[in-house]
Picture 1 (cartoon, rainbow, N blue to C red):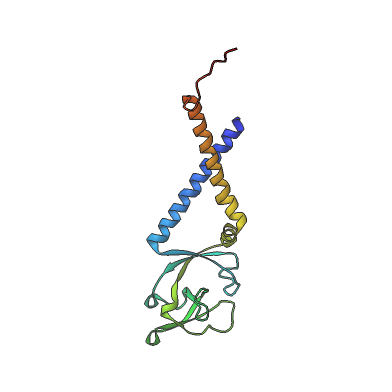
Picture 2: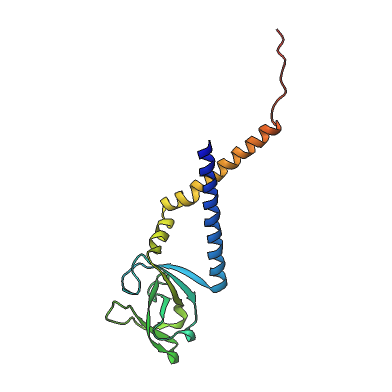
Length: 177
């Protein structure tokens, strides 16, 4: 019983820490216009590698500078984000050009309207964790099991309170023989 209480205590502490970190990250995202991206390809090696995570801050076209690493929606697929280094800016056309550090040929020019933001931090290997959290085992381990444990814990606690107060006990019946 002692071990169960200790495990339960540390599960609660861990859950509180994770919840606090999540709230802090969501607050930072909202306050500073941040997004978390996951690197899928090696086009920017050695700056960052597949499996890394990128913290991106929202900016507009006039804020771009050559040498920045920018993320933008692909002109071919608006659901796809491309993150490459800015190699040219064309204010008269309201466009810019990027190139992956590992690639030999620059990308086609991109309209400023497709710009999403610039990379402000690289979190090595954090992208693998993000991928795992988005998978079904990650959801089970990080969402469903903790939710079930909290529900069972609350039911157990309520049952103990009701037993202590004898709210749902029926009066004893006398048996006549």
